[in-house]
Image 1 (cartoon, rainbow, N blue to C red):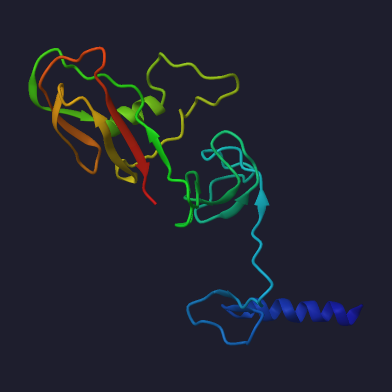
Image 2 (cartoon, rainbow, N blue to C red):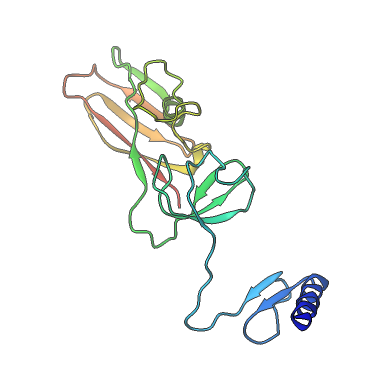
Length: 206
């Protein structure tokens, strides 16, 4: 028993005495690595598995910790099973480049004034999206138990998204452009009809 105890003390002293640690494989460690794991062909790295509650809630951690990485097993609110890292303010889902489903969503309902012909009109698509997802409009309803204190989670930077106009009525709108911040510029050439449409899609940048 004493031999085991002294062995553990020696191991602890060895690990704390060096700035770098190598696990497995040959003893040579990359000079820029604090910790290096040299895996064999049939072993992997298993990160902590826990149940997150929502991206804005640090739970089950006591606080948001920048750089914390976990595997979430829960499917609730705005989190789904998968890897998440913490940016110091919220949990961010990690999506690999080979993820097959493109993350996109349609623009919430907004109004365009077409009562008179006009050129050089603008509409801030990102600002419209953010205002609705933040639930600043008093005319909103949420299902029972749905969190509303911080609104619906939304992208905090306009340039986190790509903006697309997938279709529009050319008899009403013309000269449509959208810049990288989501500011749409357009001309109104006629009043809208019962069949006038404009489809706006946001795509999340990888």
